[in-house]
Amino acid sequence: MKILFASLSRIGDYIQHMVVVRAWALANPTAEVHVLVNDLIPADLMRMNSQFRHTVLPRFEYQNRINQVGTPLMYPFLGLRKIVQQLQAEKYHKVVDLSLQYQSAALLKIIDPGFFYTKSEIHAINEYVNPADQTHLIDKLKIAHGVKLAPKQASEGITKRVLLQVSTSDEKKNIDLPRWKSLVDMMRSDFRSIDLKVISSRAEAKQLQTVFSKSELFICNFTELNHALDTETKLISLDTSIKHFAALFGVPTLEISVGSSHWIKNAAYQAGNYIFSAQQECRPCVHSSACPYGRNQCQDKINFNELNKFVGEWITGSQPTVFPMITEAHDGNLGVSAASNQRGVKWKQKTNPANLSL
Amino acid sequence: MIQFLVNKNGKIIPQSDNLFLCSYQRPLSEAEKWLAQFDLKHAKDVLVLGGGGGYHIELLKLKYPDVFVHVFEIRSEILEHLEEKFKRTQKLALYEINANQDSAFYKNLFQFLDSKVPEIMPFRSGWQGLESSYEKIHSSILMREVDTLAQYLNTANSSLEFSGSLWEEKKNFLTLKNLVLANTKTAHLDSQVLDYFGEFMK
Image (cartoon, rainbow over all chains, first blue to last red; front, side, top):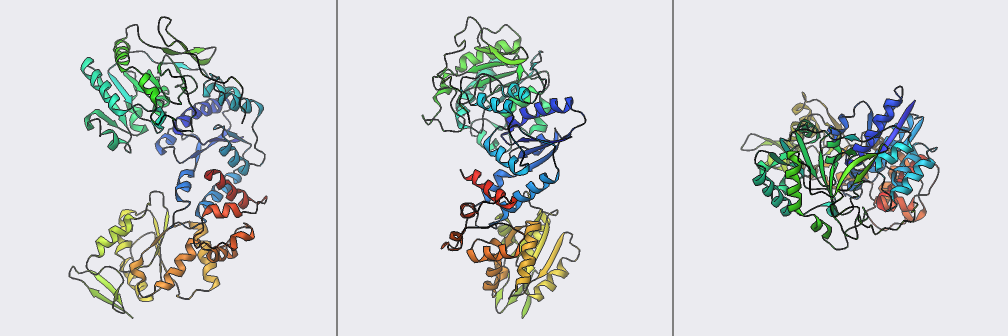
């Protein structure tokens, strides 16, 4: 059997999709698995899944070049036609859209005119766009594709290093860099024995150096980060691909959820992670639209003094006294529980319970 | 008639009717500025339109040795000079093109573009004296005018059909959006692929 999985979303989604694909391949050892991704996915990350043949759809390159005066008008068309023809020639027995988006479905329909969403996939899409739904993406996909998966427990051990991922590509999910700098300074003076580094891609290093010194940064790609994610490391991260990547290695993570980030749906698929989630009426907002306030005011709901106190307890292995949520495995799915004596037990969500279908 | 002069740094500079076909004083910095205009991160093939003194090609091969460079040049004397200069260079092909092209030339050109999809790298210093001939070829390669697009569609392996409005387009710069809007939707793969670009533009 030859199968094509389309993962045409962002890096964090790709990492989660590959968890599902690996589980599917394990259950179907004779299948030949191919993966279709877009050009956001770094090559070194794809190499970590090199047991599956990857095809890259340079969608963002096309988008950039569509109206460039020096590019022949038909080039994007010729490029896409070649990719479609190559994929058609593979004659897949099955084509699966893990992205669950109209745009990827439209492409798969060209590659395989017989492509359709199953009832369970349509159910997963309806659930995903329902703001009241609290099911993790991987838990939706595993049901839709009959895969056995459960969140693993974050590893426990002494902490020698804390890595921080302080920026995301989505403005709404960010916290102002000077606030991060104040937290890092606070942590550095309070926990002197800990090796503290801010993760930075090469592309964002210049911007981060407007606030952090170069020596504070760990400039890396996924391969280099891979080597740093060991049992003596903990991660503090916004809603980024890094936290999903860290979950692959069992790295305990403190997730900071602001803007459109959902505390369960978008959490790293791992039990034992802590979540500081900004409590604001409009949270979580819609992914694709800009914050109506201009600046995402929900970030101010994250109290960095509390966060610093929590980190002290967390890295020393003490019983945390300050945290709103911890991820847990409930019946094989990812859920969260709240510390009973803390504010921020599941807050009242301002959501419309109606099912929104695509 | 091409003359080859030697500048104060010992660089050979071609000249045609008192026009230098690359910078006389600073051919190397001219080549650097030229190359800096292009993003060749993902390029496998490039089409350099205009051979000039060959310094831009030399730099291109130095920085991107794995990229296959196809040089299109009208003047035969320049081609002979480049053949000698690059006789040991791998992944480089030189093509002599005529100033007045026939339909067979365009058919070959468009087949070449379809198969290689090379990055287009015009070297305008090398066009001096023959600007209109080079411009005509460059314009055909870009296919962004109604007549050059029609020329492409007539000769290329494409099953696209467009509504009449496209051919009455007054603009001299077509965009892919023009094509998507004028696409006569058929069940053919080409039509479906073109229509998919509409998704990007939503």
